Image (cartoon, rainbow over all chains, first blue to last red; front, side):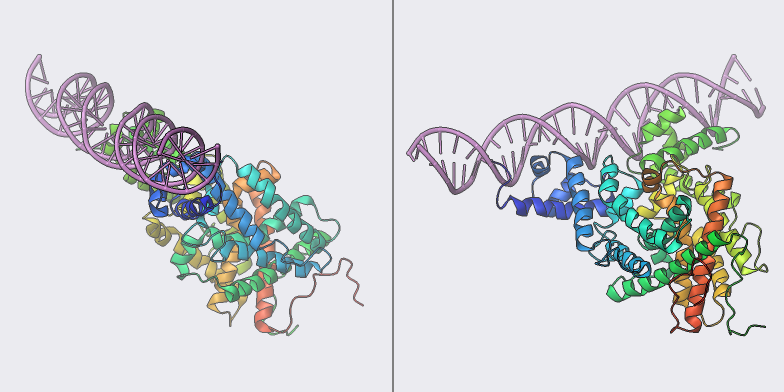
Length: 233
Length: 233
DNA sequence: GTCCGTTTTAAACAATTGTTTTCCACGACG
DNA sequence: CGTCGTGGAAAACAATTGTTTAAAACGGAC
């Protein structure tokens, strides 16, 4: 029987190396010879173990996303009975961890870029990934925002707030090449992620509250930002 | 003398077709034979007119971004003397137009995807593009946000608010494959862009105001969102 | 009409790609 | 010992790549 016992070392080594290569250069630009050279195995090994380059990529991508969601759960232990503000904060922190942690989905340079590439150039099995990981995650965020917006919120309002929240998180991962050029190296240790979490949560809670006010009273548009010194004329 | 008069038709045809191809499949996966076939020219034409595949790509990418920024200016005619709220709204609308307009930077499917790819896999000349287009744009947004935050805002605060604003805009372009799968087809006509502009501006003005309040009084954290019925106990 | 530079064409080129085939090593089991 | 099957290695394979070459077609100037 094939693929037993210590095959794992070879198989896993290939997956590990391939993740880095696919992440750094993309599917098409990555050659199996380059992967095999880095992994110290023969070119035939990939067809032997995975059946082809395409299947190897599917394995790598699925493994990477699954393990990342496993390591950084969506709700971070804050369940649906908590206050929505707490849940939002946990959600944001989880998203940032998945995206920005050195071992996460946008680790740079390396396998994390694979997810960004997947967005720019979806694989044939993008639908499976969306169903398995994105859709449940989006549902949780929708639930949180629905609570924050209160009754009367339209589906469109909820969707837009969802994107406003998740877009802030994603941008750090998606636009990393730009951000690095604009502001220098990005650090993503635990404390940096915590600070970003605070900012995005604060920003988003206020944004959602503003949308809620608009929902309640569409006539009253937000005032020109709070006065610096709280004197009211 | 080379490249005179009606060369433009051939050259422009190649640029047009190549933009679509590079956008749809990426640089590496796009073959010059495929471009030439679609353009109805010989394979040698690309080396003749552009000097090679790489230079063709550089031409296509630069042309695309430059023409888009030309068509949709950053400030949309609202200059630095206007109220920062107005300027922010104009900035957001401009960004959304550049990104989402059918002839814009993320037209789908087609040449627009090229910009998203550029972020996932920066070309050697990404630096030039950042200097020419991104940096000035970011500076304008930074100026607006600085005004909104008032005196005392740190560079880090400004930068984070910048990303919070632009991240909301970019997400519609970057995550389009996901958004389509989650919510169905995306429309991006003028009225849809206007509605998005209103949402993002409202959301962001409240977010920035909240950061400003935190700047003034770090102890007072935002309350758990406004009460549905304005009764105060 | 003739000439000359420009443009276009078809063919060939060398390099690289993913995949397949063929062969060798080696340990288990009868 | 012999046999067989599994895991791995080199080589060969067919297809495709970007690029170059060399010759033909074109179009105005004189």
